[in-house]
Image (tube, rainbow, N blue to C red; front, top):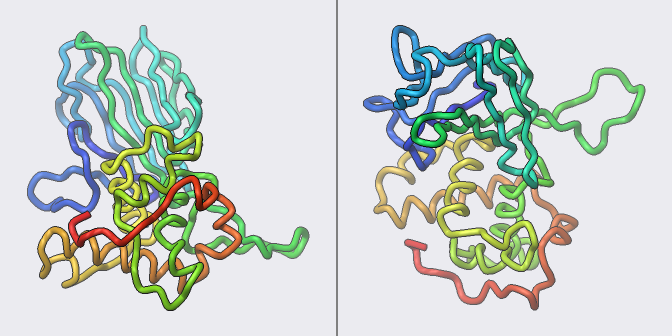
Length: 265
């Protein structure tokens, strides 16, 4: 199972066809990937003349990753995309700096301003809530979900109608999830594309769904609807989202789900 996933520069979505022109690089424990302007062995290409041909290296380790900076003069920045401006700096020549963030953006100074790519660590481990201190080795949940993350808020909003009424088969569309979450301070700038991104991340990286024919036989709107349906089904079936998680959402009067959206939402 992969430890980290690298989204190559210029790509925007999860779940694409990786056989012809890969958008994502999957790395398991011990795997490495060099980044830089390009050359032998460089897998993450940053096309800027101000960046060294081999500028650095990523190494997957356990449920996190390490970054090495091969530059002798400039630092690299790793931003926490789920944090409030949190970041760490990797100094010139630093090797194997551990990165604890689940959602990261690596930023390098370049002639064009900055060059960047994203790194995700979807297998971050979170101890089960029923773990007993001193009871031996702790059990780690097979679905490593961070309940403080924005993607978890998206999942809770998606499951909300069925949590409140199990007989309700309707699921909110992407636009409705945006409106439901926007009253939260952390979601003021949430967009439809961001929600789609989080849904893809949940489906392909966190819950590792196999949509099978559901994702290929239908039109684009059908694929989106099938993905949301499977996400909600797995999350509710295995108790990943429960009634107590509804407290993470804003008061119902602050954002209204309204009627379900059309299939292409």
